[in-house]
Image (cartoon, rainbow, N blue to C red; front, side, top):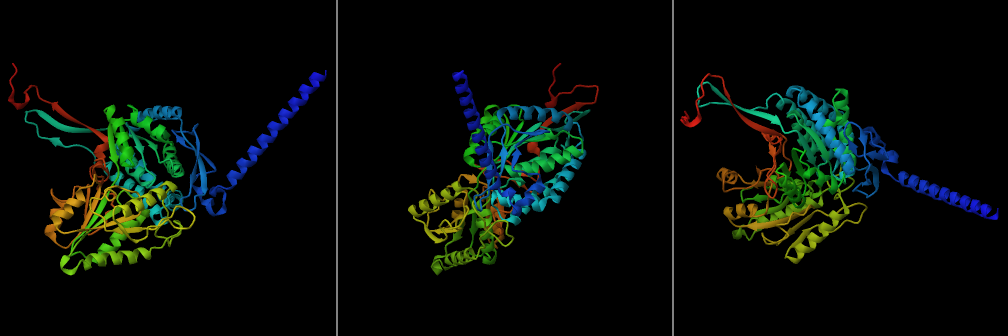
Amino acid sequence: MPQFIALSAAARHWVLRRKLLCASACLRHRAAMSTLLINQPTYAWLRELGLREENDGVYNGTWGGRGEVVTSYCPANNEPIARVRQATTKDYEETVKKAKEAWKIWADIPAPKRGEIVRQIGDALRRKIKVLGSLVSLEMGKIYVEGVGEVQEYVDVCDYAVGLSRMIGGPVLPSERPGHALIEQWNPVGLVGIITAFNFPVAVYGWNNAIALICGNVCLWKGAPTTPLTSVAVTKIVAEVLEQNNLPGAICSMTCGGAEIGSALAKDERVDLVSFTGSTHVGKLVSLMVQERFGRQLLELGGNNAIVVFEDADLNLVVPSTVFAAVGTAGQRCTTTRRLVRKSISSCNCSIHDDVVERLSKAYKQIRIGDPWDSNTLYGPLHTKEAVEQYKAAIEQAKQQGGTIVCGGKVMDRPGNYVEPTIITGLAHDAPIVHKETFVPILYVLKFKTEEEAFSWNNEVKQGLSSSIFTKDMGRVFRWLGPKGSDCGIVNVNIPTSGAEIGGAFGGEKHTGGGRESGSDSWKQYMRRSTCTINYSKDLPLAQGIKFE
């Protein structure tokens, strides 16, 4: 009996201890939830996007997710916004299967009807453009007008895709054989896997999604691990449109996750096209995985972009263009200007070169820095603390390699991931740090002597995304556009390197990956082409006049 009493006492003690531990955990959980920005009145608008404290990070017709719970942080103050439960590999498997089944339905819908669904997606985005743009600003860190502009890009691509849905197709070609027709037939590839980066968490998905859909494909999206709330919010908007039209939600699936999900997608033979946007380093790894299975890939990687300024340039265009392209999005665009290559005028002791630097420095000091969602702000934070460390390392390397900081160069003493926009002179055109793409707001100003030298310097970096010259010489303009000019995918004249329109094909050469997204004939990336010969005669003539009798 005493032994029984002792055991009962021990059991009661164990139960009490468990209750205390659970109560303590609940208190900690509630305290953690109370610190989330989504629970503060200032950010109540986040709930207009269907977001809550903890969000499902998998969508395939139904919402779920059984993986790790990650917290999304605001770069402007490093405070937690809300949480997302990521996908497991099992979630990924289920999503791919549902997407492939959904394709059987979507592919049978005529292209113009698919265009109507995309039109509705564009309209749904229009209705949420301000609140979704605010989320981009809050979670990514870009200023509010850029956040709204990014959603506008998705809307614009939807509009473009609607018209395209009635135009895609191949030519009827002349056949050398009588009684024969020679045509090109274009069909969807099937399942398009879309991996996007943090810096454009809405627009890049939109470029791919809208065009892929009207071509007859279904999409599986893996957004950046640091902008999961934007991925969830966008998917909720798209999913509602699909639901209203009684279509499978898996047509536009989503799996939030990190490298494990990205690798699974790249290696998966069921994924007919992998569209990857991100760094050259990671893009190379993805490319190798896709190529190993002879899969299709569309790569949009890094850029080390230059503005080349000749002696006849209009400086009233050069200065604001350079400031926008070098400082916009805090230097975190793939099209950001990282090199300003200026003509050296020895006869006047480089006074023109110095004038450009002086005017740029003055403009930099007038940039309004602040909270990205403040409408007066022109320059916000870097996306992560790691990016701040990369900025600091690049500044030190530039100084060690002979650079002189004429503006900026410091981490700002304020909450969040703020650094000063920086101008560095005195470096050689082929200095290692100049040839390295650092995703921060650092501009290297170089001096050239001849046109040939300027064009050569533009092309000598490994990336080939965007480039621009400033000149009034029309002969030089067409040399720049020609075979011995810029080797980039985007070749501009008298405008910045960034700020591309959706109507043109977007992408670059060399280590930028060679892919093309958005406008022009980029739709061809999302389709497979068949050359078809149809004999409508009663004879069987062979090509090239061959007789086989």
